Image 1 (cartoon, one colour):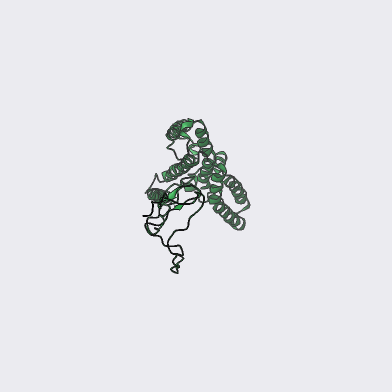
Image 2 (tube, rainbow, N blue to C red):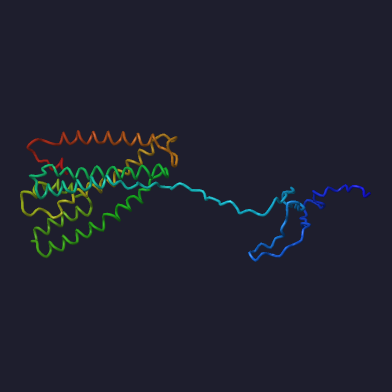
Length: 288
């Protein structure tokens, strides 16, 4: 009788750093790149040289599990489109048009301009707040650049058309006045120019030839808002508690501070309008 061998057949017979060839016949590849030897359930285990552990092949290879790439949050959340705001814009446009062409039907249609201001303030403030909550910073240069690319081309086109029309049709006096109005519109101080020169907005309903750039007062207010309001938002962001300044965090302290600033500034503006208005006097200062 042959004495039992002292070597366990289930263990590798070489050193851990050496890779043993399986004791099964090699089969040719199947044409699909599977040129490895087919190993059954009881094949000789292979020692891994890097980990020095023994692993057993329990069957044919399986397909690798799909790897799902990690999704990184956006650095600057974008404001989603709100269709309800488009409806409010439409109502404001209809109100302003009726006020100009049929003031007897809509005597308060001028409030549509105020509605535009409210919508613009809401959208701009939401963009700035979302940018700060997503990146803990507000790029003033990028913000002002977007506003300029959106408004300057149309403004320059209107000023060029009005200037060409005035030089070809208008008188010299009209040309001088329109040139001053155009310069104030280009620098976005048209509202202050109309106040200082005594040009009433109601004058266009009394006289037949108001300045063709009279409506630039609202655009001037918009641009002044775009210039000053982001600075106020940045200032508020600098004074909020640091524990609210985290990327992607809720930023409750920042939002509450912004609500407080909006309410206080709105109340101060309302009080200032009351003190400026005098019944029977010139309402231009209050209107513009």
